[in-house]
Image (tube, rainbow, N blue to C red):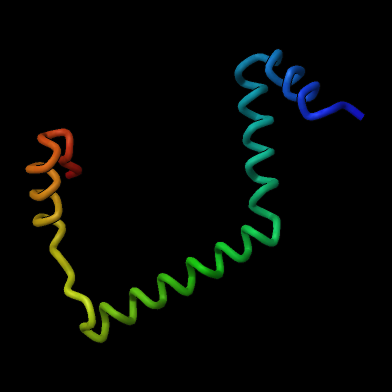
Length: 82
């Protein structure tokens, strides 16, 4: 069996499109493991918590226009998203 370094060397010799396909498949393979499931569950809990805070008034929301204006002030015109 090839070592990690040998595999990497072989993959880096592939044309860009094929390297991208290999990279994509490797990334997808990481999303199937228990760590990915744990992360997904944690994000679900976080989203639920944030939604409850908005609905019960625990947090104050800010209109998008205000956020956009703050970003434009802080970062110039490149901070505009709309």
